[in-house]
Length: 270
Image (cartoon, rainbow, N blue to C red; front, side):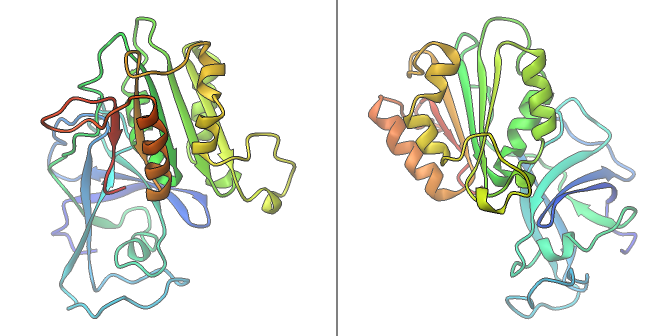
């Protein structure tokens, strides 16, 4: 990649055939402060090659056109060495086929501004938190947890993470370890394509919204999550987000907006 790009790929972890974790380090500049849950941009030129098993570009680009997309940050807000991203390959997309063709040492453009309201800043310290995701939507939650969201106090935190297969449950080892270390943290993974598993899957097989409706959090915590004691974050498949919103609304939860406080936090572009 050309030297004009301001960052370098320092680590790539293949989570599954269609999911990778990228660590991108700034080159010659310092990462700005950010809040866990925010996102920033990555960009590559149209001249960058696409990964072999992708489809052709959805449109014709000029070779020097920069293709830019935003991704949630997975690394701790305390880290100044790199930014980590958990990205899913969209074979017909414009940028991810190029990202998936990168190697360690390749250069890339990294956004210098981290933005977004999908953060914990408006959650009262005495409220519990449920973080619900599908696929790579778990990334902002990993950042929150790595930034010491548990801290002190008595707040309970749960992650409900849905994926097609067990190998798509990125960060599962890290989340299972955290669960073993803290009696205030609960990790609830689920997969739906059980027939494709190479070994028996003994975990949950329901959609995350069905898990919620069945009371998995009530059972894990011993209390029912309600607007006066819990905030809920939603990130991932739009159908999941819509279904969860409807379920939460029945219990009186409201969406948190810039000019209206609420208990449902949605990553609308995820």
